[in-house]
Image (cartoon, rainbow, N blue to C red; front, side):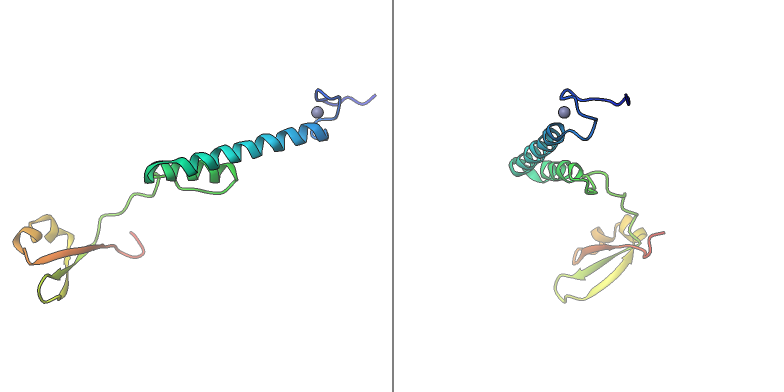
Length: 118
Ligand SMILES: [Zn+2]
């Protein structure tokens, strides 16, 4: 007689209809639990973690908050004059050395990064 692992129902492992249904049931219950957790999550941070819990359970890739690749230091910054609307650029060194304080009419809009990042 051939030896094989039997489940509680006396069936070969992985071939038992009852066991497979129970496994599928447990998977669906977990999906529902994670989906409800996501639906009830409060705040962006918890929502993102709950979304990742659900996505990973479904076998989908997810980047959790705080695990994003660290941003490189900006190469330069774009600014705009608050009256004329004129746009210009300054490098990081000037930002680090009092550009904003010395130019109260110029407002920083956004950082600029080297592309591709070095
Ligand atoms: Zn079974």
